[in-house]
Structure formats: C-alpha cells, structure tokens
Image: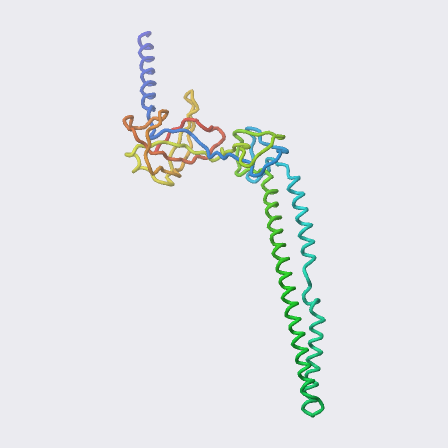
Length: 299
C-alpha cells in the first residue's frame, strides 16, 4: 500500500513538472508595460498660488490643477483697456465735422444755377459766374483736405487701437496660461513644485499619465514580423509575480521600422536573436497593471 501511495505521488509530481515546462515559454514575445507620460510645465512666470497635484490623484482633461499669480497681468490689462477706450473716444466723427462745408457747397451750387439762369436772360455777368465757380473750387478743395486729414487721423487711431487690442489679447492668453490645466485625463505620477514657489517659464510642475489606456512594449524577431500587422488583436498576459497572472486583449498600434539590439531584460522566442523590433500593444487597464510590469504576448 505504501508503495502504491509513493508511486502515485511521484506520478503527480512528474505531471506538475511536465505542466510547468509546457507552460514555460508559451508566448511569442515579452516586454514591459508603459504609459504615455506627459510632463506639464509652467507657461508663465510668477508665484504659484496653489497646486492640487498630489501623487496618485486623478485629473480630468482640462481640469484646473493650479494657478500662478496673475495680479500684475490683470492690472496691465485694465490699464490697456482704459487707454484703448480713451483712444477710441478721440476718433473723429467725419460726417459731423464736414457737414458745415457740405452745406456751403450746396448753397454755392444753388447760387451757380441761379447765376447761370440770370446769365441766359442777360441779367448777370460772366464775372459773377466765374466768382461762384471760384468759390466752389475753394470750398471743394477745403472739403477734400479736411476729409484727407480726418481719414488719416481715423486710420492712425484705428491702428493704435488694434495694437492695443493685440496687447490685451496677449495678456488674456497669459492669464489663461496662468491656470495650470491637465492636458489629459490621468493619474499624477510625480509632483515637482509646491504652492508658494516661484515658477519660471518651462519649469516642470508635475507628471501625468493616462493609466486607463496603457500599452505593452514587446519585442519580436524579424521572423515573427510576417505574423503581425497594425490593428491585429493579440492576447496579453500581465505577470504580477508569485505565479499570479491576468490575461487581457490587446491591439497592435505601432511597429518599429528599424531593428534594435535585444534589451537585456527581454526574452525572445528565439534566444539566438540579437536584433528585434519593438511593437506597441494597446491594453485597456482595469486598474491592476502598473508601469514597468512584465508582460507576455501570444499571437
């Protein structure tokens, strides 16, 4: 009886070893999980009033995560708005300013027609008509000169006003950029600045990544390239260590155009392969996969 039990245990152990060996290497490529990480930097200079970017917190795309002091920018905007309003109020009303001259010209036109009629009847002289024409010529000259001066003045005011409006638009853009917003919906991976510190343009503030849409960077040999294509569905296994694994469906979204030396931490199907091609496989994360975790691909 003891021999039978011992023999059974040996068979079970052998079966376990065989199953373990069979499962070993049951993949076509391996790699590590990555996410698109974005480092958000300051777009304006000033004191950071607040920055709500604790590591591990999630932000939605466009959400305001912090604010840089905008006091001076706001005061500049008010000053420009006042100057612009004063400038525009000085724009001449051309029609009103030339209305008196136009009335004089209209009266002289009536006088001209009257003299012309009198001249036909012999009741007026040619000199009288010449005098009226001369007066009309002077008045029309004055009107043209005044219109030219007023139009030039208006154009100058419009140009200066447009320049001020552009300056106001620039300040509005800086005011908008003083509000630090999340570029994508994601999780804060690192925080580089704190409220109360002074931020210069380009200073890193925090790093964010979309951990819901993660991808596995796996490596395939040249012989395997004929078996894969963009958009192809593949099986991805995330290795959590301690024989704990979870399977996910992935989709190939990128294939490298050039080969590279096999990374030291990566295993390939063909252990003799020195050159491999990197491939990105998009995976919908259920919250368990972490950046840097090991993964396997089965075509």
